[in-house]
Image (tube, rainbow over all chains, first blue to last red; front, side):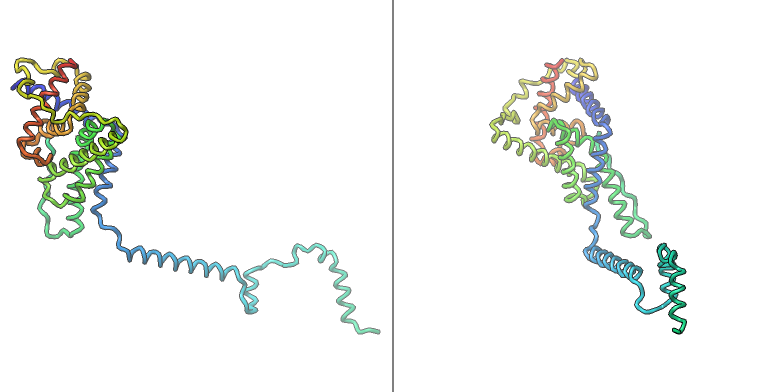
Length: 117
Length: 199
């Protein structure tokens, strides 16, 4: 009987050692399996939570789209300051021909203003 | 090593449901952590494949949490091993069916009529494992356990390794106390014979 106890207790010790010496990858997979099993107990998010989230996201998207549209379109009324702030640059700044012929346009203007004869 | 049950402390009156739920989950986590390695080794001895063994242990964890987590913690060890035992039987059944289809079905030696008395060990012998070096003994024991029929192996592992008594082992294996004794006797005889051959 003692012999029987001896070899079974040695077998038990060997099995304990084999369980203690599992590699890190296996232990990580066991940990993930355990966490996944425990996650079953946590209550799932209610459906209204998803609906509210979806509605909020749509609302936010719409607000961003409207705001973006307003910035991109110039105002319909002739608000000079608004126009100036939207685009302060001279529309003719890059027109070199216009500045080259500036004297001609001044002469033409003077011709229009002088009465004939 | 017997699975030690974490004790649940008395709940203070100020605690809310979320705290209780967290404590229950931590207790359950501690229990699963305490049995997972041995469960994996048991499954691995049955399947001889670590990936399949991991899948079976995960299935067992899912089944246990789903069906028995609400039971008292002291009842968890035999219930967990009952679920694992069930998964191991399902796995063996699937494998046998697949084996039949593939024409490679082999005879399962489980419950063959081995005469336990005729195979009884000599009590004056120092024991088969004592004659082997540690590394050899571990691999010899693994090989011998893997050769055992599922019921005999489970009886050995639950009684000898887990340290369950006969009634708890019978509950885990869903059989009578007498069957546990028979399976264990046959397992010890077969293991001894295998290890003698190895030595």
